[in-house]
Length: 66
Image 1 (cartoon, rainbow, N blue to C red):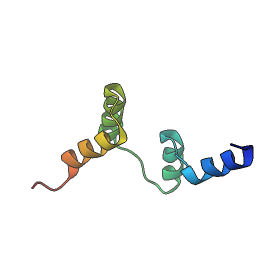
Image 2: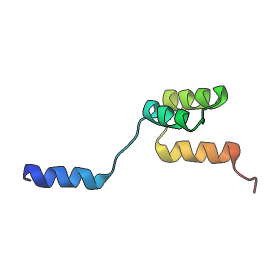
Image 3: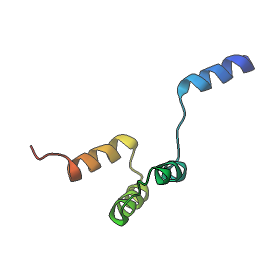
């Protein structure tokens, strides 16, 4: 694959914003994570949960009961 094709393929893949970067942007808007949410995310990291598993855990904790 040529360099220009590799660059284009990477650009089309999207951009992932890290937790620290997202926190900085959110702070401008006045949005902060609670201590409980920071603890929850730390626990997700410790458990090595995938993004899908993290979403399911958050939905179980905060979603509407069925």
